[in-house]
Image (cartoon, rainbow, N blue to C red; front, side, top):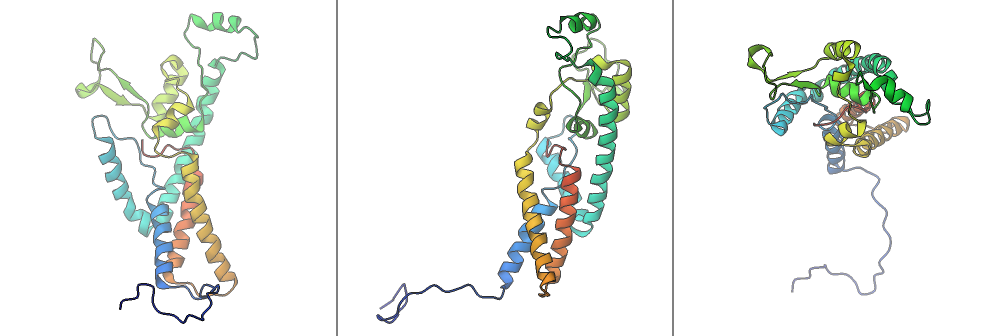
Length: 251
């Protein structure tokens, strides 16, 4: 007769058994593959698709394109992320110096009527400060001129939409600050597919893997080549997320 739970002596007593000290192949493969997928695919922050293109297909194609360097040369992606962080920081500083004086500050005037009267005629009142999130959003191609409803089309080649570069935004902020979109950081953040909590989960997984590898090296335990490769990817992943923490994901 088939015994689904096996056969055992009636006098045997069940007891607690500790886990084996050796790691199995499945354990190493599963841990490394999960960490690699999180580090390579989820940390890629691609730019906003051009107007008229399907957003999800564009994001998928761009991510697949960047998967190759992300797998075989993650330091290239880390370098690009650091470079974009530097550009975003400079753009934030420049835009804040031009636009922050126009933000309504009620602390200077309890009623703020004086401020309103002095700027109402020029239409230069802004409600939101320029942040690092705005700078990354601008570098992604988030700000654009839309002339589809304009009575006269003046764009070259019959275009009705023109993405604003960082140089164009600096020029607008200097000469025509009322044309710079006044949107909140929360509005931009809601467009992304991941918030700070989701990014923290990936960083925790990468950090935990790094700690495990360092612990095994300190104890002089053997480490496989796959674990060493994943260890380097996890280091690059943390560097990428530090640089792109304020950059929206998959808009």
